[in-house]
Amino acid sequence: MVIADSITNDLDAVNRYIKKLTSHNLSAITQISRHLINSGGKRIRPYLVILTSRMFNVPEEIYVKIAAAIEMYHSASLLHDDVVDNARHRRGNPSANHIWGNKSSVLVGDFLFASSSSIIADAKNNDLLKLFTRVLSLMAEGELVQLKLSRDVRLSQRDYYTIIKKKTAYLISASCESGAIMGRSSGTARLKLRQYGLLLGIAFQLIDDNIDYTSAGRLSGKDKGVDLKEGKITMPMIVALANANRREKAVLKRALSGDNGDRFDSVYGIIEKYRGFEYTKKKAKVFAQNALRLLDGLPQSAELDELKKFTLAVVERKS
Image (cartoon, rainbow, N blue to C red; front, side, top):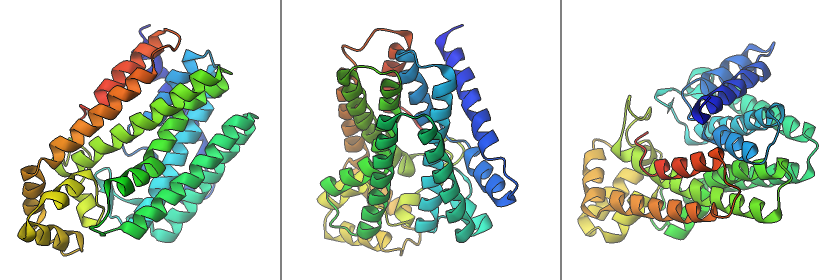
């Protein structure tokens, strides 16, 4: 069996376990959880848990549960994010809060956080528990920082990186490090995978922020310009704001203020004029290449080769 097939089998096992965990006598828990979890997520975090766990010979029955817990952490954060952002769509479908309301979405998100934490605790691994307790705190901090700086055209690249590290990259980092922790590997391997995952997560989010502008609909599963509508200032916009003339800056500011009208094409043109998308992709490639170098020295395996391929694919993705 080639490794791709065996990873698919493991991901199927993760999905079955998530389905079991979200089968509940309260219909809201089952419906809202399944609506989000089955709506086409990429399962990147479970994928990374599986690969790194197999690199250190962690038993399947252990890493499948941890991979499921991490995916539910991610799903819970999306439920909360959509409420904070008053989002109407998620992955091309009506968002849970739009269908069932904010209160139900928040409470089901809380349920997923609690269920995931219980799985981590049941693993009886203090290092793993400490890792995810810290990551949950960082994710909440990231959301608060983004909320505070929403629509603030003074947002710097430093602010931007703070937000994406806390909201996205630290959970991806933890997904990578968890395999080394469960496999009782050396401190060096843990550190390498922790840093690798952080850089990979930054690269992933940079590309995601490009995709929000450059790809939409069926290809990406995203509505066009969601970040712009929600007043989120991402790297392409930061580049445009730093270089635009007075008239162009006025257009960008009006769009970010919520007065979008039919300005998406104008905003897109300004970003493209100042090579905001090109700059963002170049930055993503730098982070991905630095991440790749951190994999040097880890035990050679088919899983390590797969991880290297995945790292290169992250910056070329269109969805």
